[in-house]
Image: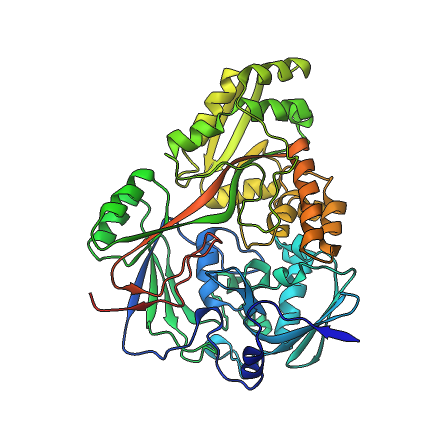
Length: 518
């Protein structure tokens, strides 16, 4: 016996319309047909590098992918509710271990790669699970035992145990984006920068260090965009990007970071500055298997040594929030109950180092060469030096940073934990042994697996909250990762932009946008 469960947004009307093949707006409201040539110009601060969902990493890559790919379900950009995408409905078995999805008919892949079917879904998730793929997201699908395809429009997931958060794993983000078996197989090694999806925009070209161009998909099942194309332009300097926005050379300024530029654009005529708490903390990950970092007293000393409040108030001028764990208050499962706090206390830090018998400890912080990550760690290194830790900062370009972090051989790294409003996403990434290098558990922490499995088995939100609170208490006590701040996403746009919705995933998605005359 099965019971039908509908997530928020899966109303009766949506179910029936989807089953009949009528185009739905999904999270974007009623579809509108394209009217004339309209180009939207979006600022990126960094280049892209990888558009394969199994291996994707970095906000800019994820932002591009969100326009190209679809998932079985997706997050509503405004509310974070789970709403339909490629699936029109689903059923869960009474014991919670079998999830059956009914797929939208008449969906086609970009660039003539044929019809979307359940086989593509099976291929996409099995590819993530295959160790040969080297996916960063294998840990997100822990407990997925088998995928069945009874017919082209039905896909069934068999789990080892019930998982109340499983729907999050299938949302259109990272491992949840569906790829075409035929396209991946035929394009081969070149696929990572030649993506094929079913989404509202088609990948056209990437000019290294300059721009990415997408064209509207006229056959998109959610209705064609009023835009004809979207150009993501790489403008690294924020002041230059602000001037371009003021001069109407850009339409959207993605990922404002510099406080002075935020204030400038707030004062600019015709410019709207949006901000929203993000599902994102920025953290110092400590490799707990090397040298003095094995000692919990050393890790706690480092937490007491770093003046994180001064970082937020001084360097960031109040544009960030305090972080008490790797989860932010945007998560329903967030808790501060009993979670250890580490006040700025250099004397306590020195005492802990003496207890541990550690002196003249040479410590290297590895970070990425992007604003602000290439600058603020210097202040943290200075704080550590004041208590006797010989701290230095190593700045790497994006590709070298990802390689160094995933190798697991760094002493530490600065990392943002960006993703969907699913607590498992950051917690599995940072703490599960299935995410050990080449995954992103660079601390090599190994004490959270059982608790994460217990949280997945929880029958309701109250049960999930209770277990996740235990996870937060334990990980903040063991301190393999030191939260530095909770992020706040700032985006600005010009007066011609209509319908833009800022999400909490730290990405930019312009699918609902239209342009009006200036």
